[in-house]
Image (cartoon, rainbow over all chains, first blue to last red; front, side):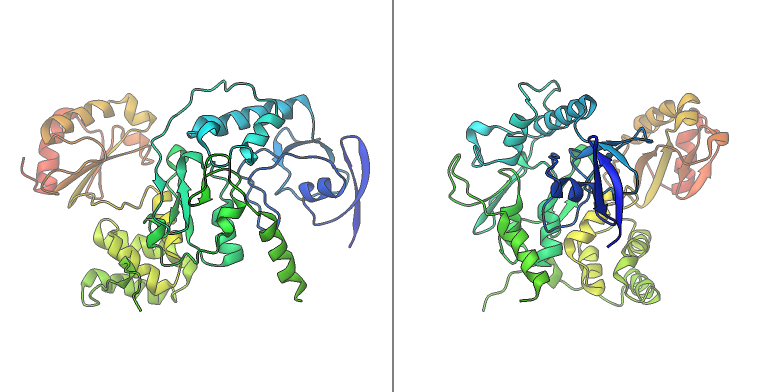
Length: 235
Length: 170
């Protein structure tokens, strides 16, 4: 594969063409915060956490969906980016009802980890406290819309990896919700295969196996990434 | 073996002229899943809105996932899951129309027909909606009654105009 030169955080690098900025950063141990990105499923650039600065453009671009180009000068850890990362994180918390003290994912939650990582000590935005539903109709799993951050990992893993297309997204803006089939209860779904991939890739406590108590949620997200890799190997 | 019941098990009558219209459109589009929006357009036009049974029918015929159909319908404002009424009245509230008194037209309709934007009269005869801009700023304030654009509407004429155009009784 052809190599192109570029600079990330002042470090000159030779990288393969066709890769995304995020992939290149991972290969070179440059840390980039992500949330909607998940190894093995397609990127949509929804969460805006992986924004990077690229010289020559005033726009901040998402590292997960921006391809590398020759002679790019990329910055990943400026004060401006840190400021935006903090705002984004606070907005995640303000949008739904995230209460760690009563959440199954407490201590094992990507959103909670993110809050610690960006040094969020309080939320400067008013909480929306939306009236969100909890769907317990599935025999094995629960969907709690209060804890959903709309990363759409579940939607993508269901269509791209499992191929079941059970999950979708309804409405727009603040009204968006994850839906099963025709916005019908998950337990009534005719497409869901109960494969648990969505449960395992969910970064928060929005999707969890029934009969899990507070702070006791255990997930195996690597299973999905490895599954995708193994399928490609054609063993 | 017991099987899950779903709305997908219901069938629409293929002799219904509205269903026929949808079937014709689907055939024209070669049952391509990516013609979903065009087919939903046809369905919305023939029914006036999109009942769940019609969404189920389209889902089955095009073999697209139900979640995809529902996502598409709820994303675009053109599609509606609820009946918009036999006759529709759309008031433009774009900048030009707003300045020229769209609010007064709306309050007039609210007074005469007891309707607020997005609502339908109890007998399902008349529905009221608003649009951000219908692209007829030169005609401000504009309103659309049953697909017919009315220019420079005066609040005092609204009641009679809607009555004569739609035949709705108050």
